[in-house]
Length: 94
Image (cartoon, rainbow, N blue to C red; front, side, top):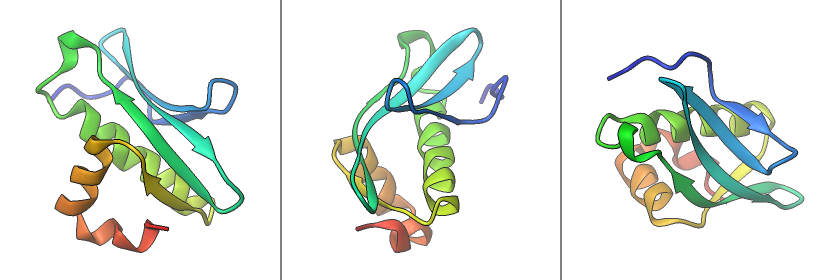
């Protein structure tokens, strides 16, 4: 798997978590509620697919959500699948 050029960041202006990899940006859109972030869509550029980038993005997003003391609501199928495969993050589910 290619290493990112920077860590996952919260782009609050665009309401998305972002991860730069090989000059492209993978992102996960969210809607913020009082206590939780609803991740509504995860997008990985075609050239980066199949390399674990989306999983790395969601892991980083969950780390940021946890650090902020918030919960997550899986609003897209990728995040639902990720949370099922990573029970260690189940405490974040709203």
